[in-house]
Length: 268
Image (tube, rainbow, N blue to C red; front, side, top):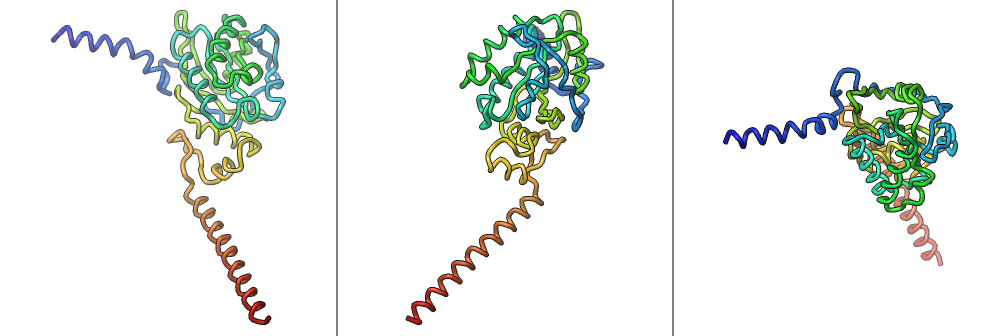
């Protein structure tokens, strides 16, 4: 019995670092997220892409699409893989189309990670996408020098810390408008497609997505405590009242038209 208890304790002890990192609370001091909603990020910052070429954030934002930023590092043994898996699943599940409606940018927090490491990681994930072609030019795997990375992470409020040979950090993706304004933070390693889709439509000011998505934005509002979009009762009532009024007008028109036809036929 004692051996069984020890084995159970060891099992939970071994899993604790993973579960702890999935929480939005910091593992250690100086690690976490300070949300900076409404603030601009510096689009003039220059990173290195997976091909070893310099790329400015402004080039990624140049086509007027919202962007998902995922802070990770490519040599991460645990959490970053889960984050990237979540982003991959999100791309596969979301009705918005990568490249047409939005882009994704991984910013590596480890300045020692190389473009080759970024390229290897990208190849692995591109191969698991339902549609890998758009990812080649729209899912960016960036690396950068220490100061550039630190500045970028400070601008989005992402606090991380090197512990031994690894980095302690939280799991989050950041939604950014085409102008570089931070609009949403989505925590965890599994990102609800509906919530992210609505967040991207909102970030783009309705310039991406279907007409239905724009209606849903009106009917739902983001609840920061729940961390998701919830029904907006007031807007739903307004929409319902508007539809009822429209329905009454349509019915009234057909009744009037029917009565007019009946009178015309009676007169003949």
